[in-house]
Image 1: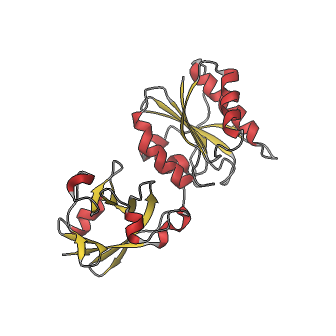
Image 2: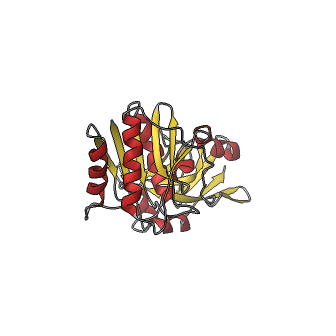
Image 3: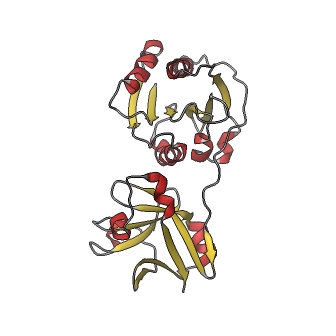
Length: 261
């Protein structure tokens, strides 16, 4: 049983170790992939983006256990989705609807509701028993459930013939992902656009590789998720644009303009 573990607990204390211990006690055959434990605290949206990026690379029957903000939301419930041969186990706090396509959400099952007072270890133990049931092919018929969803992200602003986009993600290399996808870009701009990155030097085409431009030069590309990304070959778009990436909650304050040409 492969378990891809995603949390916002960090690695400075024993919480992640206790998760693995609880699972191993009831499912000794479990093997773990530590995807990330440094999701910004209570950031379901950031966890969803990461989960969407990696889950497709894992083998069939992997359990994607995402424990991020387990007691945030209208009810402290645990949801389970079995889709395309993989299992997704997470709090019912909007994380899975933000990570998976709508077609996957219809199979969501309610497998645990935490009693008050809420205790993380009880949530972890419940998740461990769900994983053991998956491994032993004894998963009960849990009731289906409608999932909570996150509030919509800030939409693209139309100012005349200009689109004002927001930064929704910055990776460790300083690459910046915007809240516009390839379809929206072409619907609004066709094939003629200018992404205003450097004064008097807009980006007017999409690159397929970072090395399509000279070292130190900016570029735009479409990510695996289909979103528009601003990057710098052997450099940092965040640094070029003066974006502070230490506080991800403030990324949305930064605007990148795309003009029609």
